[in-house]
Image (cartoon, rainbow, N blue to C red):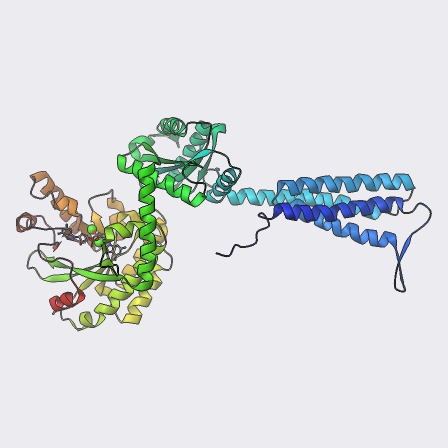
Length: 553
Ligand code: C2E
Ligand code: CA
Ligand code: CA
């Protein structure tokens, strides 16, 4: 990749050049101060006669301008040199005037004063703007730009340390139940407590909604320090005169990676800390995990999968299968869920369960989402438009995909281009879609619904989908997760749970489908659970387009 020229990267060369010019200016002042001994001096260029003082004046103005630039460039050395050289010019100018008893360099002296004032003022404003650009408005800590710069510098300076990735899980529940103001206050107190515990042993930055990064000095035991930080965060918070116990509301997790041991590349280091964080989340709430070799091999595996996804997009290794959905009461066809597949030229198949989570960690998922939308609407347009019964095609959209501002127009373009009716399309989202960029996600869903597109909430029953949000969004379909269906024969409580989801769905005016129904005996139990549809191997496995078309009839 071609690297952009950056002043900061070349600051030493830049400062060196400016210093050279400035010394020239300073010398010119000294000469100017002493050149009048023995009468005015002149320089001849062809027929032109130019007083030496004029040339020196021009040189001085030029070097003062360079000094101002040097003082304002985001470089401490540059600013210090600017003050030093400017000061030297000022003093030597006065000494020169006193020695020669000649006030001719006086305008130069004023120029020098003006330049120094400009350096101080502009430098101050620039530093203020820079502080703003690297500070997080809600917590007052570094933001992700500032933190990344700091971390990069530490690594470049060959320092040792630990990068800690800290996440408050389910933070949106606080925003949902208490409002964003309280959410912001919780974040502010959290950051203040983190800073208090970390103190001089590291630096804290907020790098996402409820995600923080902490750089811990190499001489400190990061695990121990973060443990203390967890304890401090779990102490009660007083917000608007009310007590707030973070630990009964949410869980927090942390992943630790060390530099240079695990990596001395910032992106890789973040990936290591992220993998450790994932592992700590798998272990449960309030856990700290340190990156290790197993995670390292997982990372290599993910890199390999990432390369395969890129190749699959270019060389068309992706194809789709369609799993039918039926009405429980009369087994009539509701529609199909489109499920992506990857087949390599050597015949090896990689399941979406493996490559979708990897694609979700990068922007590769966007092209997969777009590919599926376009492919499905193109493939099914004719057969669905000609069908007497309404058939719905469901497409899975990743959490990041649904929060993209351009998502709705991508759907619109697909529908128009492929002549596919909006009411025959369903977008499947999971509740993780609301973790980040919630506002844009809600906006997109509302727009899609206005267009006539249906919205389904996938994997329902595995997370914490709040009733308030469901009512607010009015989704069309709740998809009860297979893990709940698996237990349907194992006891009344499990059946009651599904039944209550069915009733709740109907209260909210949405239909309910049971996923992963595999056997006839499960089917028997399911018939009495107040749910509408079934999607599972019992009535139909994912199938080719040709078979799906035949089923539509
Ligand atoms: P999902 O959306 O929950 O899809 C249902 C998964 O359950 C599918 O696995 C399907 O084949 C499987 N399944 C359906 N009925 C049964 C059953 O009776 N028994 C069993 N054991 N499994 C059943 P698949 O196709 O491997 O997909 C896995 C996940 O990958 C999907 O879970 C979805 O999250 C993701 N995915 C699949 N296709 C796409 C896609 O086009 N885009 C995106 N973003 N994600 C996709
Ligand atoms: Ca799905
Ligand atoms: Ca599902």
